[in-house]
Length: 92
Image (cartoon, rainbow, N blue to C red; front, side, top):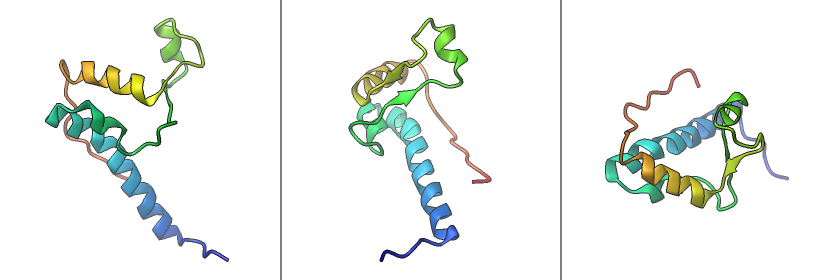
């Protein structure tokens, strides 16, 4: 039987994952490399716009999502005109 991770181990794992995922935005821009954006997700990952009012504001279907390829392509365009800096996380 597999052991159950402790609460502190689980918390540390969640924090590590969240930091890696969010730092990809900053690192991808700094290196001008859009492929970095998908380094911490599986190939079948989909990204959804939240809150629900965002797809409505852009006249998108309510179930709109990006697959990894379309998200990377959109991010590649974004890093040409904006940058992500100073990713500060606290109270995780």
